[in-house]
Image (tube, rainbow, N blue to C red):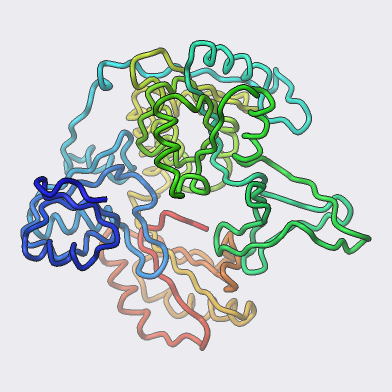
Length: 458
C-alpha cells in the first residue's frame, strides 16, 4: 500500500529496492514497517514509534532471536533520538521502567468522543447447564438476543483457530497427532483437513482403524469454526463471519472488513486477531466463550498476557458511545481473577504482579536466558544436554535449571531439550555465556539456540 507521495509515506511491503534507495537518499520520510524495518539505513532518523509495545510478536524466535521492541529502544539510544512506546497496558518491563522514572508516561484519560468503557458481566456456567456438544449457555443466548434487538453487533471470542483442537477415534482411541511435532493436529472443517499449527503438516480426516473399518471420530473441544456452527443454529437469520488468520488473509478480506464496519455482518466469531486495533462502530457486545482456557497453563507471563489481551479486546466494544458489555463464561467460582483483569485501572494489577515477580526473583528483577538444544537422535541429545550443562555450570555468573524436555518435545522433526539460566539483571551473565559457548564443541547434528529474556517457554 502506498499513501500519497506528497506525504512521503510508504508502507513497507514488497518493493524493497525502492524502499531501500528512497530511505538512503532521504526521499522517503516515514516508514510503517514490521520488525525488519529497524535495520533499514535511515539517513537521518528522528523518531521511533513502537505501537502495541507489549505485543509478543515483536519477539522473533526463529533464525536470529531478538526482541524488536528492545532493539528499537537500543537504536533510539544509539542515535540519541526519542522513542514512543504505545500501549493500553504496558509490558511488565516497560511498567517497571515507568515506576523507576526511567521512562516518562503520557496517558489518555478518556476514550474518543468521551465514550464510556464497556460493562463486564460474569456468566457462571455452574448455574446454567450447557447442553451436550454445546459451548454457549442459554443465558448468553438471551443476552445476545437483547443486543441484536438493539441493532448491536456481537462478537463471540475464542482464541482457537479451526473446528476442533483434538480429534480421536471412538473405537481405537488413537488421536491425530503431527508426525513432525509432539502436538495434536487441529481439524479445520472449512478446509476439510487436519493441520499442524507449528510446522504446517496437513492430513485428510479419513483413517483406517486398527480395530476394524474406518475410524469413528470424536471432536474434543471447540475452535472458532465449531462456535460459528453453534451460533448459526441459534441465530439463523443473522449474517455471521469468522474473523481469524485463516479467513482474513485473503483477497476479499478488505470487502469483509467493509461489511463489518457497515454492520452488514451482525455476528463475528473471532480469535485474538480481532483485538488488534480494529474499529467496528456497532460492536457493543463481546462474549468471551471460555476464559478458563486462557487462564490455564504455567506460563510465567500468563497473567500479564491475559491482562493485555482482555483490555485490548474490550477496547473493541462501545467505541461510538453506546452502552456496551463484555460477558465472560466461566466455571471458575473465584471471579476475582476476572475482576482484576477487567479493572479500568490496570496499574493495580501490574503493581501486584510486580510485587509477585520481585518476591520470587523473576523477570524483570532477574534475567532469564533460555538454552534449547535440538537434534534428530533423542538419546544422543539427552546425553549432550547433560555434558553441556556440566561444561557451563561452574563457569557462568548464574544458576542453570534443567536440562528437561521442552513442553513441545518434538518440533519440525527435531527433538528439543531446554535449560534455563537465571542470574542478576546485568550484562555479566550474557557476557559469560558469550565467552563460554564458543569453547564447547557440540556433537554433529546437534544445534544450540540461545534466547535472552525469553517470552515463549514452549
